[in-house]
Image (cartoon, rainbow, N blue to C red):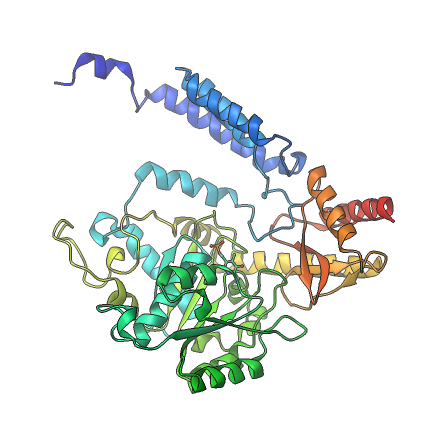
Length: 479
Ligand SMILES: *Cc1c(COP(=O)(O)O)cnc(C)c1O
């Protein structure tokens, strides 16, 4: 028998009425937030100390009225947020999440499936595997060859790419390890590529000096001629080139490396060609814009963030490979404590570094079930158009566009402050502080520019006009 003190003390399941009240309370709040996101300040005014005090009071003064506690928690959370759901957050790829995708996070938590093995979550594992096939095909892989796994983000996707590159190149890697390779493996990416590659090189044990950083052209795209020259030099020096990473949509300025050209070089020197399509991969959902990614179908692996442009909640990335056995070779183990309910080669724990895993793909499945692929095409189309609109409005008002990309990411400056990086930074800082809009800065060809990215499907023309007014207001204060 459960001791009565334990039984009476706390009911984690609550009663049916309380559950209904709490659900309504949270969903109403979420609904209102979704409706009125524009009314919130984007950035919080609370200091670290204030936040710590609020958090501490939540922890140290528990209220046994769950409704009150949830209310306090929601209130504290909301006022301490940076509201990247706000349509005038023109920032670092973190999207607003469609309401149904947000609801799917709640549904997931209620059932709490563990996708470690097929048998523990048959529907969930099967659905992720179907989604991997479908998206792999959209990238141009054949249905038979495509394999992959949902991961937590682009950084994990790139780490997987590096591991697959090593495992496929070096027979000794899996059992004897790097020490037995006998040569220094080196990999190539551009100076504009994402720094998660640096971390991945440290993590896999080849060290960050194994990364050869290739310069870019005046549009921030990897210079394929310099790439080839560097490979030749490295071979002459006795190093062992094993991998090339192209970026489809750089974080700083949205540049797309020459994927097709890079592919030919990768073939010539037998390099694993990984495409970091964390941001730009979303173009694949758009019938016309997808040609920007020409050549990606021939790559060996792809990292694609669903939690950027496609607006899934943070923690949703897809790692894809056109080598159907590489993940299994890399990760398969036999563990006596795992239930004998597996489907050979399908269990995610034999397929990725994770063991227990969340149902990462559910928000994507939910979106598809409701909006279909057309829904994604619309998201891409809309943000692409708003990006064009921003560009046009800036040009009409004499701002200078500094980058050149088909992605809705615009780097710009103004002739009056073009050579004054302090003023550019000051304007961006003031804007962020005002809480009315959010942009960042990025250096291009030695020049500090404003960086505005349409990361939000709800951003509209009025938001853009608003942004421009704020920019002019602040420019006029500084000149
Ligand atoms: C965002 C980004 C990453 C890192 O992805 P996370 O999802 O933040 O882990 C990697 N590469 C590029 C090009 C990115 O834009």
